Length: 296
Image 1 (cartoon, rainbow, N blue to C red):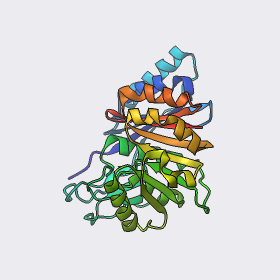
Image 2 (cartoon, rainbow, N blue to C red; image 1 turned 60 degrees about the horizontal axis):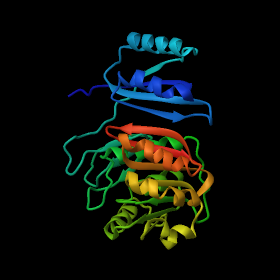
Image 3 (tube, one colour; image 1 turned 120 degrees about the vertical axis):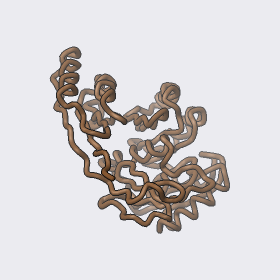
């Protein structure tokens, strides 16, 4: 059976106009996101869709919007993405999932891991996080994009922090992509147990330090601060409440990936972190969930 081809639409626009262009191209796509390219400068608007877009109509819409905003018409990039061989969509548990360069699959997967991807072996279990949920998928996309320019110092013990680690999927993604130690913490002992198992399955047992505890008050968290990268896929209210602690544990110039919030909750979470001097640099909506990337 032939697969519907996946297409990518991309353009670079000034920060102030990114939301307007995201809405313009988003009407033609299945998913759209925006990401900062230069501090205080241009943003990348990127969308994906199944099936070839109406290029003429899309170009016309972008041109009209640029004229209305009084800016130079941005160059529109439209390309057909190479097909991904999922091998089978009926594997036990859950099918393989692609999020950026991350390829999430269960131990039952017998197909080929796509060339150039970063495999994450995570079985559906008693802890949250298999890549299927919009918040986890958004986090993986955010980490993939951050990895294009964010350097994490290798060696030493600080590395990164995964707050509310669940299955450990984000800790695994960071450890594999940056090859740095990751401190993984969860209030649920079962999540810690599953994280330890998944770390071993992925050959990352020595890179991931998993421990149960009460958020940032967990002793291991303080011992390895400050962090250049923090991931926190929790819920909107805890994220907002923990914003001051996140700032204290995040290195100046460091990034935090925040998720577990519905689209309608993002303003509250953004404001809570802005109040701590953290700046929004990206938002990645996946369905009804939004992932935010902030920078100190």
